[in-house]
Image (cartoon, rainbow, N blue to C red; front, side):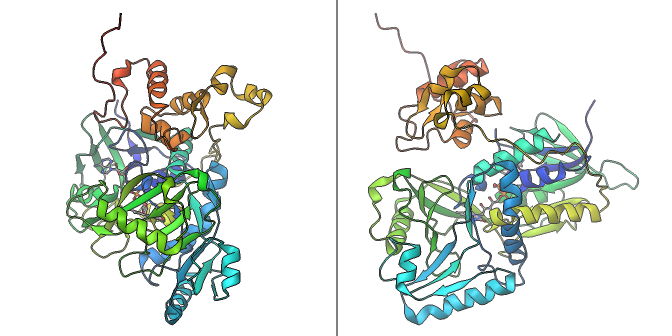
Length: 485
Ligand SMILES: Cc1cc2nc3c(=O)[nH]c(=O)nc-3n(C[C@H](O)[C@H](O)[C@H](O)COP(=O)(O)OP(=O)(O)OC[C@H]3O[C@@H](n4cnc5c(N)ncnc54)[C@H](O)[C@@H]3O)c2cc1C
C-alpha cells in the first residue's frame, strides 16, 4: 500500500536535508525526494563553506534576517552531528586607506543584522599577528571573529544520516516530474508528488530544489519563482599548505558578490574563489578566464602563496531569484506548498535558521507537531582509523587488516573507512569521496581509484563495470582487456 506522508521535501541539499532533520524531532511521516544518487550534490557540494558572520546582507532583506541567526545556531548542528566546524573569524581587507568607510558601512550593516564583536583594525602589526602571510599593502581590515568554516557536504551527509536514523524516508535517483494538487475540501492528502518510479501522497510539500526550484514551483501552477544561475569558480590547494592562511579573507565586496576569498577549508586545504558569472543555462564547467580571475584575486591578498600546490578546480552555481533574495513562504498557487528557493549565499549559513522558520510555517498552516520521545540528535562520524592505536581500532572493527590498509595515501584513508562509508549509504566513488576525502588529495584519485572500484564492487556485489563516479552512466570501465599470456 502506498505510504502517505505528512511532508514531502523535494531536494536533499543542505536546505532540504536540514529541514528533514529538524522535522525528524516530531512524530511525522517525512519523505525526501532527490534526483541525484546521494545528498548534497547540487550547490551544497561546491561553495566556499563559510559560515558568514552576517554583515554582508542588506538589512531588511530576507537573507539578512536569517544570516546572523543561522551563524549563531551552527554549533547546535555541528556538535551533536560531529561535523568539522571552526569559528576561525573573517577579514575584509582594503589596501586603500580612502576606502575604510566601506568597512565602516559593513560594521553598521552587521550591527543592524545582529552581528556581535565586529572590529576595524588599522594597526598593521596587529593585522599581521592575526594573519601573518597577508599582503603587506593591506591598510585596514574588518575582523569578524564569529565567522567560521564548515565542510558543507559532510554537514549535509550528517543531517541525512541523523534524519534517516530518526525515521525520515529518503528516495534517491527520484527526480520529481509532476505534482498533482487536490483542492477539494476535506481531502487528507492534498498533493501527489510524482517521480518516474513512484508516487508520494503528502499533506505538505517543501520545494527545496535549488536552481530548479522555479521549475518545481511551476508544477503546482506557481510561476512566481524565477531562478537565474550564476557560476562561481574555485582553485583548491593541497593540505600541505595548512597554516599558511588562518582566517577567511575577503577583499571589499562588489555589487554582485563578496569577492574572491582565500580561506582554509574546514578540513585543512586552502581554497581561492569564487568569481561571479551569470549564465543563461546551468553549467559547472570551469573556464580558463574565470580561473585566471580567481588566481589573480587570491594573489592580491596573499602574494607569496605557493600556487604550485593547486591540486584541482571546481565550480558551483548560485540560485539567484529575480528579487536577488531568498524566496521562503507558502505559495499563492497551492496552500500547503512551501517554496524555499533562491537560496544563494549565505544559504549554507542561514540553513539552521531557515529550517526552524519553515517548521514554524508548517505549524501555522495546520501541521500538528508532537515531539518524538525517541528522537536522538546525535550522530557519530566515520572513525579515522589511521590515527588510532590497534586496541582502539578493535572497538570499531574486528578486521584490523581493513583498518591498517591505507587506500588513499594522500589523505590517509583506510579500507575500513571506505567500507564504513559504503555501509552508511555511499554507492558511487563521489559518495565515498565526500564521506572520507579519498580522491580529494594531491593525486586526485590517480593511485586509489582502481582499489576503490574493487572495494565498491565487492561490497555492493556488482561487477566493477557497474561502478560509477557519480551515477547517471558515469562508468569508469568499458570492457575487460584480453588476458596477457
Ligand atoms: C559559488 C558559491 C559559493 C557559496 N558560498 C557560500 C558560503 O561560503 N557560505 C554560505 O552560507 N553560502 C554559500 N553559498 C550558498 C550555498 O551554497 C547555498 O545557499 C546552499 O548550498 C543552497 O542549498 P539548497 O539545498 O537550497 O540547494 P542545492 O544544494 O542545490 O540542493 C537542491 C537539491 O534539489 C535537487 N533537485 C532539483 N530538482 C529536483 C527535482 N525535480 N526532483 C528531485 N530533486 C531535485 C538537486 O539535485 C539538489 O540536490 C555559495 C553558493 C555558491 C554557488
